[in-house]
Image (cartoon, rainbow, N blue to C red; front, top):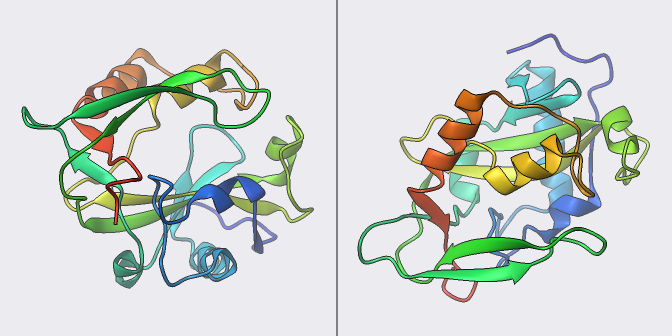
Length: 196
């Protein structure tokens, strides 16, 4: 929990709009991005958020009843999991990276949902703002039941810490790095062709 920012309105950043059915990412089959941002704003009003990985980034908790509105894309990796590695690029002008996805398995049920919000000045650093609103919805994370914290992916951490194109300046402890790598050795997003 934290102190509520003076301006509570949340807008939709263009980056989050990639989180749709078939993307291999958390999405809602029923709620629009604008409805999700409005709910994030309500939760912000209630003070139901925590600080993110740097100043100007916060993680807002969705109301627990909202978890059923979202599809969690993750499977737990086991000896029968088939994995696919692809050389991909998130956006134009960003360095490509190796993305690993699961080709089989059943998506885990969402236990809770988090909304990642970036403050306007943080987005302006790399000209990644979509509006002039103080807070913008950047990402939606459905956490599998039983998981209390979803660590950032190591590729994203690397992009941030090295301040590569598409990254937001940050520094992580060795413990944060180790936890993220360990977590993502156990879970993978289901390939979009297999995600229903």
